[in-house]
Length: 405
Image (cartoon, rainbow, N blue to C red; front, side, top):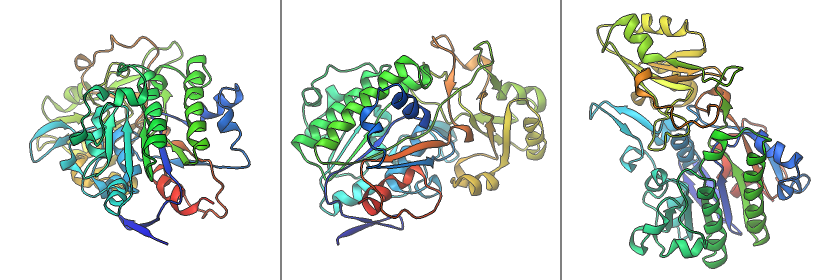
């Protein structure tokens, strides 16, 4: 049987279309609660005929590192994308990590396309499009900029007509629905061998599992997955990360403004706090997540900074560069001198003055830490003999191509 080798793994050629879905911010309880409420009948019916696993995502549990892990089948230590945002020591600047120049390896998508497969990618936010479509000969576009697609740049024309929806707001549930509507249309029209669909976590940042809005959103996903299934596709669903409330009992944000703390403790300009959650879409989370990196200059001691940070309420873990790289499979030269992870109900900020929380119209929910690492890994086919191992979200293509009946 024909296979494709990518990043040390062998993937069998798909016998029917494979659709891998990354539902942004989908902790397992979103699925559980929607099934319990009767909002997700297709997912409920997988019990007994499909495969249901709980997997671990990559830490930091943010969008870019996990989507790239899923489409490369490897952790950030291999592909190099360790956040949405990082400090580039070569450029001596803090930059977005959405440029393909930061990728250190190829994707499963591009490798299959090079081998002759028909491949399609639809992502909600445009920040991921260039990374997911790196060296991909196929269809790749974002719902956010579906009105700007061209045959030359995206492998397709008239994406708005394809989805039969108006251009959605980037801050809406409809941005994710557009992804599924376009995916179903592409499956019917183009019959790709492999398709990757990636949504946005706008709903999950605002609504906890089991709430009416969350159940309705999961129900929308369920209806589109049922259509993909009925069209003969193998469907594998996972998530880039989970989501948790980051508040006290009164709904007030629990925030450690780490740069303010370190400025007071060791002096201005002695440290640089980087928040890898930062991206162009901060209205719903205020650039506050549960993972940060700290660069320490020669005027301060790394050990002293580590001790000070570890003593802060709400901080779960402080690791040195090499420890963090080994524990979380991260590229050591892109994560600073220290990695800081907060506990489940707390987020990390930089300076209080640098965060605009005026856009938060619901109690803060966010992600980034170990507490958001558990995600679903669900398929619509049975797996006759699964190996006993720690399953990761970046095993999605391995599961879909190598293990399902």
